[in-house]
Amino acid sequence: MLKYNINILLVIGLLSIGSTSSAKIKNILPTGLQIGFDVTRPFYYMWYKKTGAQYEFNTSLDFSRLLLEGEYGLGTITRKNPPSKIKAISANIGQYFRVGFSYNFISNSVDHNAAFLGLRYSQAYFKDELYGKLREEIEAEVWKDAYKDNVDEASKLKAHWFEIVAGVRVKVWKWIYIGCTTHYKFAKKISTITSHNPFDIIGWGLNDEDIFGVNYYISMRIPLQPDKSKEDVRKVEENKLLY
Amino acid sequence: MHLPKFKPQYYSFIIITVLLLGIIACRDFEDCRSMYTNEVWVEFKGENILAIEELYFDKPIRQLLYDKYTQHKGTGKYLLRNLKEGKLHIPLHPKHNTVTLLFYRTQADTTKPANPDTLTIFYHTVASLLSPNCGIQQEYIIDSVQTSFAKGTIIKPSLKKTEHETSEEKKKPNVEIQY
Image (cartoon, rainbow over all chains, first blue to last red):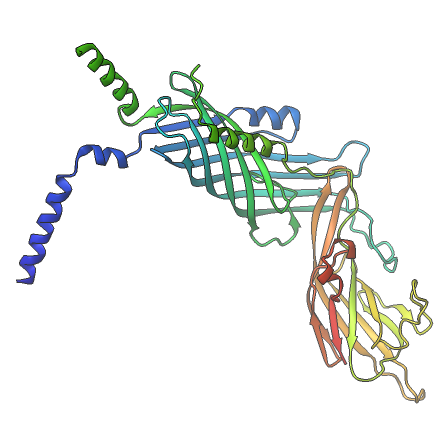
């Protein structure tokens, strides 16, 4: 008897799902996919900062007001002493990713523009190298000739942190968009440090406690559903013609 | 070009975003002061007076560190006359990972051979770039202590200069010895 009851309930359940309108299902599915590239990052780090090449790509799935975001970056951060100073070279080479979501404050934008606030979880995998001469800065002069000649360390490390992001995205032409995102990065943790502490962390920046970062990107939108807002405009125009 | 039609509340959002761009963190690469030191601050706790005649390094190199005539640079007090009221600064060796100290107590009967108390500090160093302009600095971190005194406890493992410590940290020694 119990078995039959369960079957009946299952059938009723399935029927109720079947009767759900396709419009409701469409509301759950993503409306578009945004694929972008940080345009200023390679130029800024290669030619202005001169610390090496860095690249960053991002994707975003639009679920109406909720944006599911993913970012991937790779590159090198190299620091070198000026010619007149003590020899010191630091290099951080690796890759990172960010995943999270944002809330879009602009609703019913015909062009799918966005002004958003969100949260990200980030992880970086990198190799850090440190080479140079140690500064002679020892408090007590007890140990004579005790300075290390050279530091030459290399280690593979992992770091993870969280980010609060705020940004805007604006349509410029057909399916091309430009955007800007500001990141407040916090709660960073680096895997066990044995020999040396990295000066920079790829994806994070300077190895300080908390830090800000900015991305300027160009992206393209791939629609995953017929444009609802444009359909509405078309229907209104058709109605105008009929009457 | 299709510019978005923002409601007034969204303008404040954009203003905040732009303001955030202006406060991107930066570091002074010309400030070459390291925040680390190689000196361990050791404090002694006990009931009676602890007077030390001579304090030697045994490892890595045997050499005298302080004797009973050594005075504190600031106060002029004799460092080893009564360690119950004082504190000692022990420099760690930059090239090694262990230092051993020998404490020769002041004895009433000088005919007997002195049997020193020992304190061994095990530590490791972590190098980091202070800045490209300033070079590489080294942090000293205490891993463990062994002593022939009653007890040795690590309070602050990382050796930092006092100006880079919090007001709470400034009050505490790196190592506490109970005798």
